Every structure is written in C-alpha cells, then in structure tokens.
Image 1 (tube, helix red, strand yellow):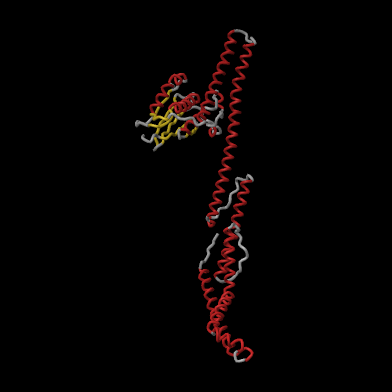
Image 2: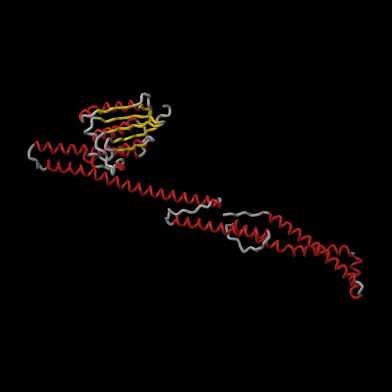
Length: 411
C-alpha cells in the first residue's frame, strides 16, 4: 500500500483562513463605507433625521461603525471560511472514524487543491486498510474452519498489518505442524502396538504350542521331549530379547537422563572389540581397529554408547559371514568423531536401505537371523540423544554403518 499524506495542506488551510480574513476585512470596510455614505444621504431626509441624529449625537458615529464593523467582519469571515471549516470537519470525522475502527471514511468533498488531495489520501487509506483487514479476517476464518494450509499474502507495504498477517501465517503453520505431529505420534503409537503385538504373539504362540504338546504327553520319548523343551526355551529367549530391546528403545525415546562422562573413544572401542573375540572366533572372523594416535575424547553415557556399538558389531558379524574381517574405523573431522563399522558380506538391498533404522523394520536378512527389528532403531535413538546421527551405505564390496558424535569441547 502506497500512502503518503502531503502535509502542505496545512499551509493551504492557513492561507485559506488568511484569505477569508482579508476578504472579510475588505468587504467589511466596503460595507461600512457604503453604509456611511447611505447614512450621510438619509440624515438629510426629515423622516430619517429625527431618529438618526440623536443616536449619532449621543453615541457617536465612530463607536457605531466599530460595533457594526466587528459584527460584519465575523459574519463575512464565517461565510468565506465556511467551506474550509466544513471540509476540515469532514477530515476530522473521517480520521476519528478510522481511529474507532471504521476504516472506510464517509463521503469526502472532492477538490483539486491540497485539502482535496489529503481527503483522497485518507479515502484511499481507508479503502486499502479495509481491503487488507478483510483479507486478514478471511484468513482467520479459514484457519478457524480447519484450512490450516491457507496463507495470507503478506504485503510489506502494509507495515504492522503485514506483521499481523505474518503472525497469523506462522500460527497456522505451527497449528498445522502440531496436528501433523500429533497424527504422526498417534500413527507411531498404533504401529508400535501393532508391531509389539505381532512380535510378541509369534514366539508366545510357539511356546504355548510346544508346552501344550508336553503337557498332554504327546511326545514319543525323552529325546523328543527335550527337543520340544529346547525349542520353547529358545523362543522364550527370543521373547525376552524382544522385551529387553523394546524396553531399551522406549526408555531412550522417553527422554531418560544420561550419565554424562568423558570417554576415550578409541579405548572404549578397543575394549569392545576384545570382548567380541570369542564370538568372532566362532564365526572365523577377526576385528580390525583403525584409530588416530591422538587421544579422541567424547562426552556421553558410556553404557548407552556401548549398547549402540555392540548392536552394530553384532550386526556386522551376523551379516558378514563369508568374509574374515569386521573393521572398526575411527576418524576425527573437525569437531566430529566418525565411527565406521564395516562388514564385507551380502549388501543390504537398495529398497531396504532407507528403512533399516525404522523400528520393527526387518529386511530378509534380519528375518533369517531372527532379529527383533529394534536393534538399529536403538542405535539411531542413542546417537540422536548424544547429539549425533547414524547413517548406512551398502554396495557389493562392503556395508558401512557410520555414527557421528560431537567431540568433547576440551578435546
């Protein structure tokens, strides 16, 4: 909105009133002179002489002229300035109406002088403000009716009204985001319940089935009995692992407090690799650790970080069969520590790669190995609560899981 009120109209008003005063003075003088000549003529007539002569002799002609001149001046001044006063009253009424929220002023007298220009500016201002206020009202009504995607076009030239429009747009966007987040949270909760129910029911059904066979003595001999008991035991262990993983995932995602300490990242991972030696030997594999010579310190919850690295190393061993190595590489890049855990087994299918960190998502290899579908989701949660992230890439040569964590400030 381009609105510019030229205040030269105030100068014009002063000149108009001055001109009205001068015109009133001139006309008053002319009228008085005319009356003086008329009185000089009338006083010679006997009919007018009788009443006029005593008045002039007692009061005097000068006081009479002064009083009469004053009255005439104000009458003439009012007549000459009446149109200006009326138009000023129109402007004042229009501005007062706008002050009271009546953005469309009443009918203003058009003219080509500065007063007319000021009236035109006020009229245009009122119409512009009305138009934009209607636009804002329309936006509020749209938001109130649930159309949270509606946005008011914020014209910078409208100043404060544009900021109001920005605020309404921000409010609508925040409401839209909150509702979408709420819907996502509800979907996530439903998916979690569905996933937990499915993954708990499957081993539990097997356990109940084999226990029912045992309870009804429907086994041939003790060898078959022990076989059924062993299957039920393994299913129970799988069930416990799922429950433990689920508890860990919900505990981390629920904002559990962290036991922050300074950790020697290289030392932590070297110790972890040593603990995996028996499992690695059983799988005919070796863990190779490549780390910088300089001390690399991070801050975090040691137990949680060990859990994340354990999950990734276990995953690398499980899916790296056929290769003799699991590699752990540590690198510092400015203020970020990068930890890569690499296996050289079958690649993760490209269709699975974007979803492997989603809870209960299990690709074909995870299903074959009996994964719970929570291991990598737990890794992601642990990395995020430490201000880091985890990524994965996979091709025919190798599969890399990379965790990035902030380096300690003093490191």
